[in-house]
Image 1 (tube, one colour):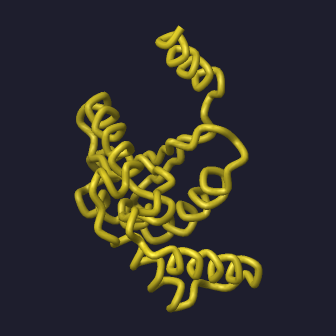
Image 2 (cartoon, helix red, strand yellow; image 1 turned 90 degrees about the vertical axis):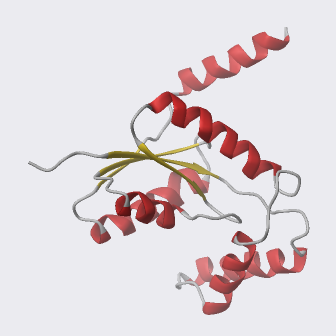
Amino acid sequence: MATVRRGVILVGHGGIPKGCPQEIVTKLKRLEAQRRAAKQPASAEEMELDTKIRQWPRTPETDPYQSGLEAVAAQLRANLGDVLFAVAYNEFCAPTLEESVEHLVNKGATHIIVTTTMFTPGGSHSEVEIPEILDHLRPQYPGVELRYAWPFDLNLVANTLAQQVQRFL
């Protein structure tokens, strides 16, 4: 009987670091929009620009979003016990979800749960892109169960927000 080794990936949106030239971001977003409209795969130029932005040097000062997500991830990791853990980003920041899945599989994960900080319905990243990526990855890792912890229970989200508001009342 195979050993079950669990992994968790926290996916955040990703932010553009200060100092990254806006023209690079603008060009990437234009190429992405054209690709989506034409239903074509990403061009070499789009992939190069995406990689350049994702690999841009970052500090907590130049990318407070990444720093904040890493802080949430550290707390989540501490609450989960003995699981393999990774962070991923939808855009603008590394690693990608694909890279994080590969990383956990290489560490021995056989069951990976993917969750996101994007709690509310209606977002293209959480409702479309993450499920599409996981659907694309499943055939590459037939011995690995990839589950997406979505949608969120909106009552739990509202309770968390109510607790936050109560701190300030």
